[in-house]
Length: 76
Image (tube, rainbow, N blue to C red; front, side, top):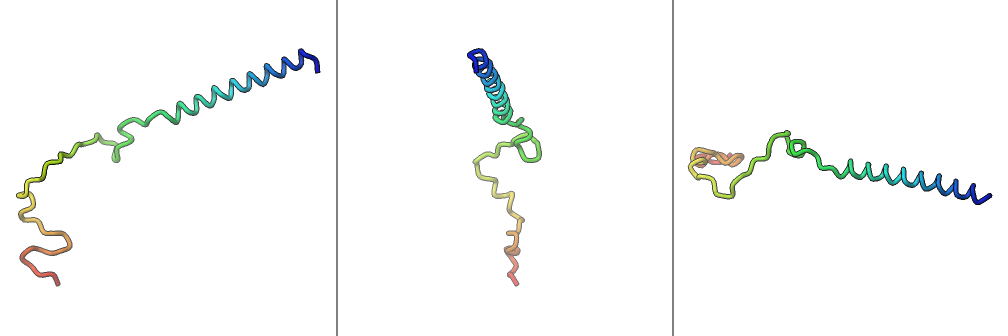
């Protein structure tokens, strides 16, 4: 091979390398992009914060313990 042929081959390989790196950068940019907030929340709704304060105990006054039966009744 002549020097001209070698330089042409190097240029062709370099161009192919540049194209491959550009494609890789596009692929990484597309995968690293975070999903929109609505699609990350189950049901697609907005996130709701729940306070750490205890619930008012009067909410449970007439409630039965599920599976355990009522407070004034005996389990079978």
